[in-house]
Each structure stands twice: as structure tokens, then as C-alpha cells.
Image 1 (cartoon, rainbow, N blue to C red):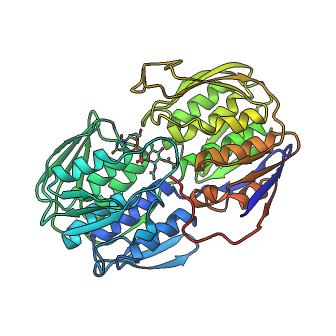
Image 2 (spheres, rainbow, N blue to C red):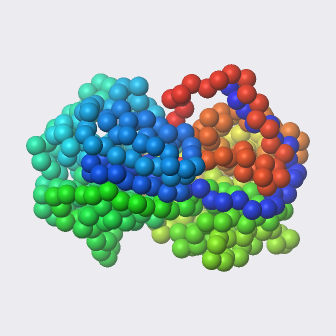
Image 3 (cartoon, rainbow, N blue to C red):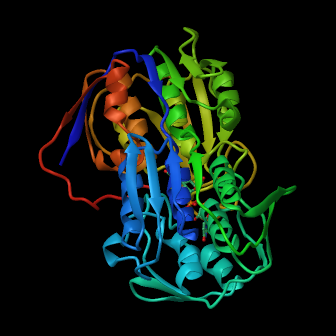
Amino acid sequence: MAYYEIEGGAPLRGHIRASGAKNAITKELVASLLTSEECVFENVPRMGETQVTLDMLESLGSQYTWEDENTVRIQTPQLTATEVPLAFSGINRVPILLLGPMLHRAGEAAIPMLGGCNIGPRPVDFHIEALTRLGAEVQTEEARFVARASELHGTVIDLPFPSVGATENVLLSSSMAKGTTVIHNAAIEPEVIDLIVVLQKMGAIISVDVDRTIIIEGVDHLTGLRHRTLTDRIEVASFAIAAILTGGDVFISGAQQINMMTFLNKLRQAGGGFEVNHEGIRFYNTGKSLQPMALETDVHPGFMTDWQQPFLILMTQADGLSVLHETVYEKRFGYVNELKRMGAQVELYRQCLGGKTCRFVHRNFYHSAVIKGPTPLKAADITIPDLRAGFTYLIAACIADGVSKIDGIRYIKRGYAQIREKFEELGAQIREVDTAPETELEALPA
Ligand code: EPZ
């Protein structure tokens, strides 16, 4: 298995280009199944997760080519299979989103059980309930979900929580349903909006109304499109913190302020430097000490849960006590133990600390953290438990004293494009040691 060796201490300096967002492109590739015409996506990140999604679509009859490094042409003249092979079991969250488009194309669909990062139970009950309301009959079998529908029809869906995946599922399933669908309590993350933009370019009629209401008027036909996928705001935030904590100065071209305003506000409050211009955002260390703060994650436009891990490492270097309350996933502090071994002072609590009471109150999940800083970190051998924690470990290793060995890098490679190359480019002392070839479909990101 491959691992990284990182020698801490080098300030990250220079210029990198932000990649396209994994959590947008994978869903947009699924949207291409709704038409038999050619769809072209630009700014597609070359990473394991994109490739797995393309492989899944290919197993259903899609044909694709890479036009250049980051442009994919994909077309599905006919659906040649109605079952996603079991080989894709436990790989990621994409199969559940395939159900709607496959039902439109073939009236039946079977998908394997989902995978994804181990950050909580991650049920799909909202998806199944929504598909059922749209007129599908969905059965859960031992190893797969099987769905049938002669046609999907518009309905009203009240999501119990503004789930990103469930909102995307309804968008993909209802764009060609008969009649109008209304989603109440919908997710409005930029990646969801980017999917709506894609569907609109394809001919869908979707409006985003006040109070998290999305209205989809079903159409009979969708066409091909050309689309440039939005930038990965999680990658940008992570490199921003890496730049600041290493005492560096990094310009990230393609970084989009509009999708990162909540992060930028918190970064400014913490004392991190940034400057925006029309090409991207420069992040730098101001030379002043970082300030502690209370912060809680939330659905958009709140502080996103995927920024939580890099921000926690920032808090370990702030001058005083910080509080971080995770309100989206119940088990998203699993990575903290390894950071404690490196010297971070973090305590986890079951209570809702620092802000409002969340839906995990009295549910016995360690979902709040108190972080005492600043604490120097020392190098360690650590194993990555999930994608976003993985990047955080890279930052920790970059500021630690000594050489860290980081195992489990397959998680990172699945969700970040050219991650080692980007760290190297910025001057990090990072080396990949490959001890054996990796298997194709191993590992599971978001
Ligand atoms: C997406 O996950 C992202 N993954 C996640 O990114 C991201 O953290 C999350 O949205 C929130 O922004 C992808 O886009 C592939 P949810 P998703 O449905 O859609 C509960 C990363 O590292 N829920 O919004 O799976 C669920 O358990 C990741 O890139 C149900 O209870 O997230 C969670 O507590 C990790 N039942 C909450 O809702 C359901 O049927 C939010 O989940 C669906 C969700």
C-alpha cells in the first residue's frame, strides 16, 4: 500500500489551480443519463471518484472520452443494462442517484448497497421515501435496491432535513416526471445549484423559491449540454488553511468567493489573511496570532461540515479555547485521536456546545469539540480514516516537527485531484512511497 512521508516545517508558497468539485461533477455525470444526446463537462477533476462514476455509467451503456485533461464527453444512446453491477457495492453514494434516471430510461433499475466515508450511519430513507412518492416501487433486498415505475409523477416532498443527496435525487428523478414536483426543506448547497444549472441547460424547468422550496415542472425531453463544473470549495478551504498554518502565501486560481463567504468570514475572524481578485483568492499568514472562536457546522449557507476538519487543525494553533459543534453528521470527529497523538489538545463532548441545540441533542454522539491552542505538533505515523480527515492530516504533518508517515492515502486520492503534486508544487516536503499496486475499486470516499 502507498503512503506519504511528510517532513514538517516548510511554508507553502506559490500558485495552484483549484480543481472542479467532486460533489458536483459526479451528480452532473449522472444527469447525462437523462438524455441520449452528447453532454460535455469541463473542469472535471481527474480523481478516483470521477473515474468510478464514469465506470458505473459505462456499465449501463454510456460512452465517454476525455477530450483533454479535464474535459469529458459522455453520451448514452441506449441504456444497455438495468442493473449497476454488484462490483460497485460499498464504493460511494452515486448509485442511489442513478435510480431516477434509470427508471426514466428503462422503467426498472437495480443498484448495489452504498458506501461512503465512515462519518455516521448515512441512511437513504429520504431518498427511498421521495422516490416512492414520485411513483416508484422500491424494494430493499439483501445486497441491493430494486426499483420499478412505468412512469414517475410530480408530487410534494417534505424532506425531514435539507439533505444534499436526497434533494439531488429528487431533481434527477422529477425533471422528466409528469407534472410538478415541490421539494420543501431542500438543500441549496452550491453543488445542488450547479446541478440545477446543468438540468436547466438540458431543458428542465426548475425554480428555487424562498424558504428552501424547489419547484420542478416536469418536461418530456432533455437534451445534451456543455457545462463547466464549479470549483471545489472544500479543496480551496483546505489549501487556504495549509498556507496560513505553515506561515505561507498561496494563490488559488479558480477559487470562487461567492461559494465560500461563510468560510472567509470565519477565516477573517480567526486572523487568517486573504485577498480576492477576479482570478481567484490569495491566502496568507498575517504574522499575527490566530484567534480562538466558537463555530458550528450547518447546511448551506452555514459553515459546511466538510470544512470542519481543516478548521479544527487551525483551532489547534489559535491562541486560546475554541469550540466546534458538528450538526450535520453525528460521528465526524473520529479523526481527532490521531491528532491528539501528535500533540493536539482536543476534548469531545456529547452535548451541543457553543451554539444552538441540534438534532443530536441527548443522542449520545460525540459531536462537539473543545480545542485548546496553540499546541506545537510532533510528527507521527497516522492512518487516514476518511477523505476530509485525510487532508487535515496532511496539514498537521506539514506543521509538525519531524517526519510523519501517513497511511490510507487511497482515501485522499479518491477525492482530491493531484493532491501530492499540488503540495509539492507549493514547496511541501512530501514523498509518496508505493509498496504495492492498489486495486481498482478499493476504498471509499464521500
Ligand atoms: C453530501 O453527502 C456530500 N457527499 C458530503 O461530502 C457532504 O458532507 C454532505 O453532502 C453535506 O454537505 C457527496 O456529495 C457525495 P446529506 P450526502 O444527505 O448527500 C442525513 C465529502 O467528504 N440523511 O446532506 O450523503 C445524513 O445521515 C462528503 O465529500 C438521512 O438521515 O449528505 C446526514 O446526517 C462527506 N437520511 C444528513 O442527513 C437520508 O436519506 C446530511 O446528509 C439522507 C441523509
